[in-house]
Image (cartoon, rainbow, N blue to C red):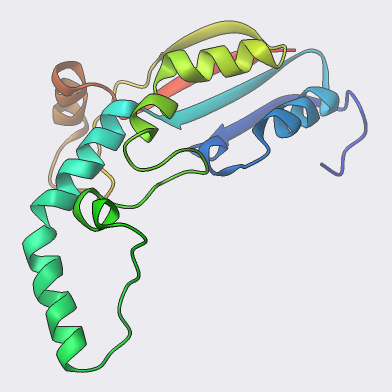
Length: 165
């Protein structure tokens, strides 16, 4: 990061860390730019979000298959899947594991272990209390109140971590 050591009070990321391949080095870089006592706030997708994303992929399998056949007939570019599993339950979302093992990689317990291993003090962590899906199912049709209720029943789609240097 193009900032001097100890020059930043707060670093915030939203659903980004799962996309960073060198996450240990990146976390150390965040620590470097934070002032003593500074905070990092990360919101991350949860395993519940990933599970819903996989289910949605299965639900949309038939329409996607019809579209794929249409593209093949029309000789249009086809999506490439490395494995049949990716076609059925979806592609990997982040940088680690595969579409199934992301259920483990996105779990709060996994992220808490990572944060502690690189030297963060976990000040607070909690579910974000909101329900949404990878394809934003019913976007604009569910009120915030309903999304909060669904999160209590089906698990929050996002988890919030407050970390201190």
